[in-house]
Length: 438
Ligand code: HSE
Image (cartoon, rainbow, N blue to C red; front, side):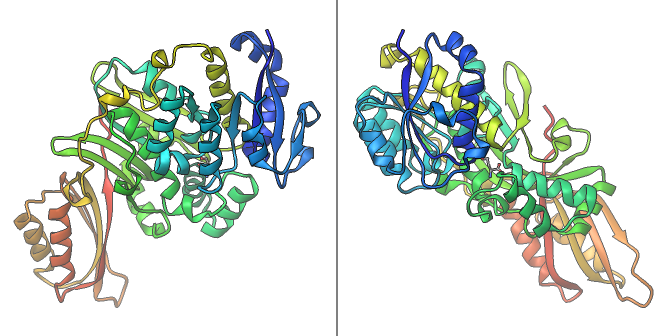
């Protein structure tokens, strides 16, 4: 059978990795797909030939991405440019031309996926996006197919390799934030704009996708709460460790009575959980289904070859199903498009979680009692409390508290009241906490 002809947009970290994997494993990939996969054409502005194996096997390399999506010989367009523009225009044009699309672009899918999938349905083409979430981990395949029997209850994932690498190196080696970030950039893990990694935007893109696949709701990136890791203080990392917890930057999607929680933020989790031990650039996604119970997916979340592994898996999938009746293909968002639900994504003050609180208070009688009574009045139950002895000559103490689960709106009110006390200095540090028990 004739090889399927693909057009590659971008030869950067992931594009280069895709060429390398398609070259190295060409024979095995063809045995799986039922035919060869040929890179007939590629478009790239900048690339490093010395990092790419098999560049000479590409039919034609130019710098005009639009020429690739207009080329009638190309059956599958692989978009590895990233960002919104011109990626969106290229993908829509490819679909309009009746081509299938494979992309690693989480920002594009999280923000424009609904319109992209609608256009793809109309044209009867597939859009594969396995590489958009958690690099090489086949989490989209798992959610869409492997867990299809389940009512998914919640997902908690470490889904940004750069952020996890930074937190792990800071904790284990005491390295400076900027230094670790520079290394992540040099290794090709970080986004073009690394604030996307550090401020949680990249994780929010990925969580938006996971939430839709898990609960059958349209993509709603703008409803995802996002808080980054840049304000994590070394003393909170140390306090968490003393209490038996680790701080991880988690994406959490949970089905709650009033709607769906979709939130990315630093989170204390018990150190004995497997997820607490996912370190470095590795990603881990914990999915709780009603039938299967908790399942954990672990692997490299970024990097050339791991991400290429997911891109090529999509290419194999698309190649195998090229001739399948479009209505019999796996739906883009796991649920049939006319079965997507309008379950609301909850505002952050309606979510329920536990908290780690740190505050500085004057060391005098009644202060602790006043703080405890404010928490009590707001219906917040304290799980643990720790007062650090003041240094000699100091009149202030640091208080660390863990609370039981409460609606975030109640906690906001309690924090505002505590911060207004004359005996409390500065802001209360609040880090959300999850037990992640099955
Ligand atoms: N910047 C991303 C990360 C790349 O660090 O996880 C993979 O999406």
